[in-house]
Length: 261
Image 1 (tube, rainbow, N blue to C red):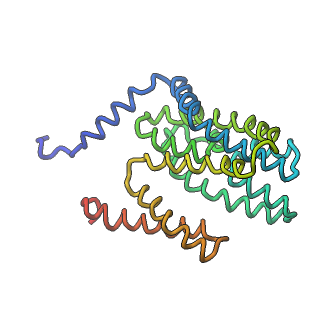
Image 2 (cartoon, rainbow, N blue to C red):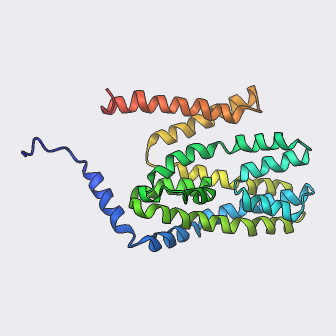
Image 3 (cartoon, one colour):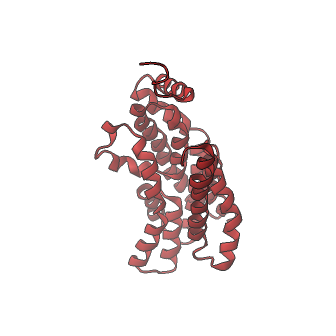
């Protein structure tokens, strides 16, 4: 076959493949690497958020068992806050279940974008257990790091990353519950929002510029939709900003680059 007939291979893909193959020696190495990556800022940020949630639970009359159990079994701070608020207001079980379910719909897209990157042999029923470890922080870091991790080691890395974040959340919730009353309400609420802020900053590090465009549009459109209807503003902002960003990516940037005719 002549050189003219050979398919073109991007040199950057070769470099990426080489770096991914050399990063970990085995699955155990990948697992402990995920643990180490979580042990820094990600776990501390999640810990601080759960401290704020624990303080909220105590301040609103929830018992320690209920507050800690939400973290252990839900492990989704936005859903936990919604659950807490609706229990306080005396909402029905059906209404609470529907509201919490709506706050968790983000996990559908997170799962669909992250889990297909695992090796085919790892896509079995064991993923039903792994999905419990999927949180905003673990998803954002995995999406960034998977580019340099060989497919067969990605699940081990993700489990190590998510497991430590989950383990540290329960003590954070209990500590916040015990410290309730000692921390001003403004600081408590601030701690709850540290985790989404860290997620936002982490996600901006993902290479495709389209992610940053979507976030920028969210900053612009969010306040506008909040003024129009605060109850649906978050959902509307995400839908509109994401759709516009997708259109820019598909119809403008990729067409300009010659990817799409």
